[in-house]
Amino acid sequence: MPLIDTPDGPVWKRRATKEILIRWFFWLIAVAIIAYAWKGISDKTIWFFVQDAPRQAADIGGRMIPPKFSYMSRLWVPIWDTLNIATLGTVIALVIAVPVAFAAARNTTPHPIVRTIAIFIIVSSRSVNSLIWALMLVFIFGPGVLAGTIAIGLRSVGFCAKLLYEGIEEIDHTQVEAIEATGASRAQQMVFGIVPQVLPTFAGIGVFRWDINIRESTILGLVGAGGIGLELNGSINTLAWTQVSMILLVILSTVIVSEWVSAKVRGAII
Amino acid sequence: MSAADTELPSNWKKPPFIKSPLLRWSIIIGSAIYLALAFGTMDVDWQRAAEGLPRGKRFIMAFFPPNFSDNLGVMWDGIFESIWMAIISTVAGIALSIPIGLGAAKNLAPNWMYLTCRSIIGGSRTFPEIILAIFAVKLFGFGPFAGFVALSIGTIGFYAKLLAEDIENISPSQAEAVKATGAGWWQWINYAIQPQVMPRMIGLSVYRLDINFRESAVVGIVGGGGIGATLNTAFERYEFDTAAAILLIIIGIVMVLEYTSGYLRKWVQ
Image (cartoon, rainbow over all chains, first blue to last red; front, side):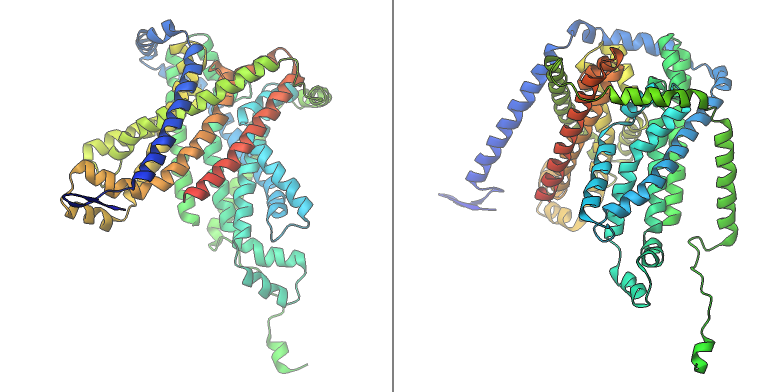
């Protein structure tokens, strides 16, 4: 924070002149990139449709009101399916994530090569979106709940394993050493020294991911992987807008409830 | 053998994770019942799944070797579209998030404004980007503009929420010190609030850029443009080798982005 001498005495400025120039230079580059990116998008946009959007919005909005409440009777099964996709997917993910996490944590990995493989599993599971997983699995297992469950599971492995192995790396090592001093084997050290320390983290991760998975499983139906997304896709394709608004209401309340449950459970664990 | 040895308990059990036995058993039994019900009603066509396995093998074999050359032009188009979309939607989303985030901070905003801004955030957080994208496509037509709108709205829910929480957690003494110099509201925001939240916010915007790129890879599936549209087309034309190439490129870019964003965030903080 420099004081700049002027004829009227020193004046305080937040930054020196050189710093200001550097900042302006970075801003210039940023604005150039943004302008170029915007050009890339606007070249591929049909502006007539964009100008037409308010009218379209009013039109669709008008058709969506009121939601068709009687449609609810046909939604219970898809909701149950959605819950199952999310829950069973999370269970699958946790089962796979535990060995991966122990292989990926620096203090428990059997060998650096194993660690590299585990990290690769984590990264590749995280970088493919669950919708893309579902797109591929629908080809293999056929449309339905199974493809969705496995897609959610594969997608969540990376997330759960990453948080879990970070948890394992942050444990208090003295406890493990104490167990080791009693003459425990490596497996016993893990069960009695490490597992009790990471169990709360593990439970927290599970619930956290479950909450995210509820959100994700509502859309898997768009590619045919079961759940309420299937109904949503069908209703949109048949332009049944009152059903669409009803489904959106249901998704909204499911997400709110799951968020509340997950917050409560995590509050109880931690 | 001395007397002390015999007095030690010989059978020690690990204390259970959940201490109350009632809660523990009700959780165990409840989850068993749930799992039974879930598997019972899941309606899995095992025959179809078994049939699918050899098909799945053929499907996976069709991915190898990934074909980078045949549709190179289209692939580059899609990737650049995704990158532009991610940049623009991050910038627009953050620009919209700043006023909303300021309004959603309890220590800055009056109550009515707090509630309005919080409900905007809540609204944009509940629906996944894909659902937003479906509606954006309906409104704005196919193409990257729809994806841009959907991702920007998604960005608001994420960024404004974290910004508001960060502002609520600032150190009040610094803010008070600036206020004591007689600063106006804008000066107060600029010199007391902004420097405190800036490092974390820069990190988060890089992180959000990363997320937006990932999401831009899927909004294409519903018509929102970008690499997702290219990927979807490849799947629909059964060009699995091209699809594999696209997936590898997505994974590659995401990995690069993740490392850069992690590095940048460390560097900023």
